[in-house]
Length: 407
Image 1 (cartoon, rainbow, N blue to C red):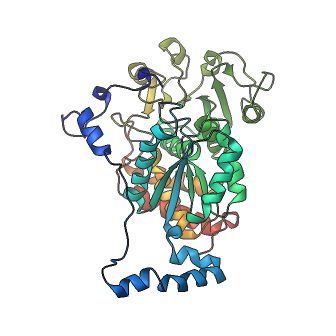
Image 2: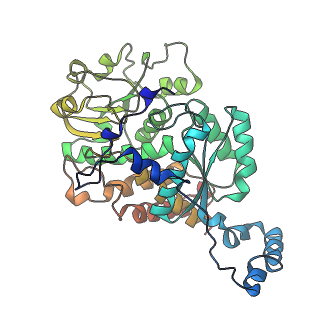
Image 3: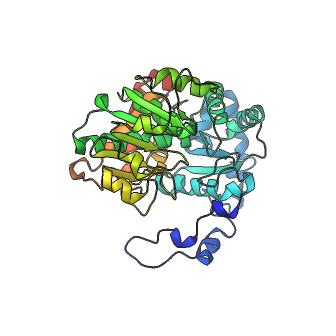
């Protein structure tokens, strides 16, 4: 990592409604000693409590779980906890910074689980880049947890790791960089279309970035009814005749780009009415001006959006970013706390497409009567979000036999 990977503290937003800047001293003081801890749910302040919470009482519970492993959800914390697991290869906007440097982010993710959903979460960083070793390690750790949140693992390895763990484990496995981002993008696009009078089946969408978020957003929008998506990476438009292509990009080439466009992103932007940026690329005015009038522009790179904001607002009727100091922030925290809470409450063994779509529509529905160009998505701090997403996901899990829900 180079110093250029870090943006100055002066660029960080201060609390809304105040002019107080956030300083380095404040940031480091807040992180000193770590940001999370475990705590006991019962007091061990006398001999009776010790005998109940630990030996000999604990042996009775162990024996019961041995006879019926399903009791683990009731008599341990696995019914309401997740592991947040990363190898530190794709951390925020910092890239491959390694497991130790990634740990503050994983602690932060654990904070979000606790703050927004009351879910205990344990940050785990793995000192290996080997796909097989990561899969084996997570499988070995799984009995301690009710769900696995994979975080900041680079593409294309993340696709195989999630897929194989999802098949191997009987608890929900969710790569938030893929599906959390895709859920919130789709929710925002639903409401952007309401405001601009568009329909998903008529959209021409350009997605810049074919990593975890770009591929997942492609799948989510296709599942939601979008028929014309062109995905662009650093080498241009992805199409079947382009070589070489990784396995996941071969899927993209076969399933998208119905007009069989080729070449640079400029060709994709001609007449497009939606741009979704989940990459490190940069676009100028000449390129964005190729889009349909009153376009929808989601420039989500953080802290520097793919499209300069003055240009985005000049050509876009709706503009969203990944920044917390701008309107319409596409933030994963709108999705993952409620999604995991709903899945855990339903006793689901996996996160299905039906559950993700339920989360999408729950987020889009909040504030539907108060939509505006700068309010297409609720704030991550809106207290209505988590309960709505949780209940929608719980019901979807119970109605979806493939989720393995048991309650």
